[in-house]
Length: 385
Ligand SMILES: Nc1ncnc2c1ncn2[C@@H]1O[C@H](COP(=O)(O)OP(=O)(O)O)[C@@H](O)[C@H]1O
Ligand SMILES: [Mg+2]
Image (tube, rainbow, N blue to C red):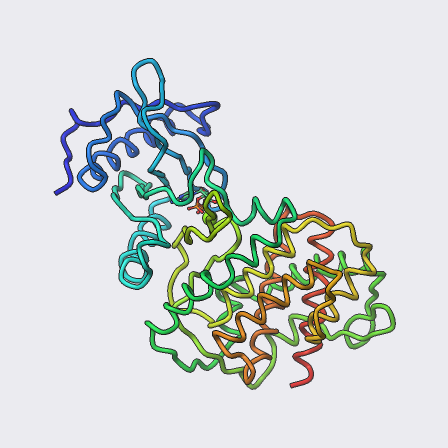
């Protein structure tokens, strides 16, 4: 049974700058962290420290505070390496994450490749989750860290265990036929058509800037090729596109994939969006993370051509590790998920996911150019079917 006595609540210290905006926020979040650590203690054993040192971990796109928690002695000495992570999220998001964990993660994913959820607590408008730390070393390493170093070998090393992981979800959940792929992605990524159209406007700005794209009567013209208007093609078709659903992670960007000190797969984290979704959603999210994070010294013309070849499924250009990486993701996906018959729905997911990323404000020029080109080439494949 979790202990709840306030007398067992640990003393907290924050390393570096506190991430809070107001003293009140600091106090409320600290109280909640104490509570969740007390609740978790029954699971993680006696942490034996005089106090808990909290180091801010990166992330926070979702508006959460995430800390690594290490027991320390009174003189501040760390007593042993951190084994615990505490995430404080807005109430809805944190409660959804806990429910998803209990429903989809604990029962289906092997404990070796998932964090253990040791404790959960709520107070006012926040929820806190106490997890075991994945990976090792002082700073847990994400796939994003490796991609940003240009380490595409690390990606290659984790592909199989990661996809087998995802495949467990696919096997565990009933695969269901669904009726409307456009409605699914519109609701999931945009809310309404207006915000999808705004994203298309941003994408066209990029197409003009990087590739000299221009409007024409039917859509866009870039380097002597014609492209259809994107939202119209994706979201305004009369006859709905069917698709297959299963349990998906739902936010499988490379920040949510942890590696150990030997660059091996340590597990996935962040289950706020886990649940039933499009069968290829996670694979496409992963390839978009490569587009976002892998460094580039290619010209924009080269980026355009490489994305064209990727969309056409042309054999990998061995001299181009970036193209080999994306094609490797698709090959592994194809082997485990078999998308031969439904490749159009894969291309749809590329277009919808890329379009959503147009709303991000922190992407590099190379990332914007890659994503823009991948969306435009993906929609041309959709006009083929
Ligand atoms: N269990 C864990 N083990 C190691 N690192 C973690 C763990 N949980 C979170 N992190 C780190 O904290 C970051 C943010 O956590 P995450 O749960 O993804 O929050 P958000 O919902 O804000 O994206 C991750 O990208 C990762 O670097
Ligand atoms: Mg995350």
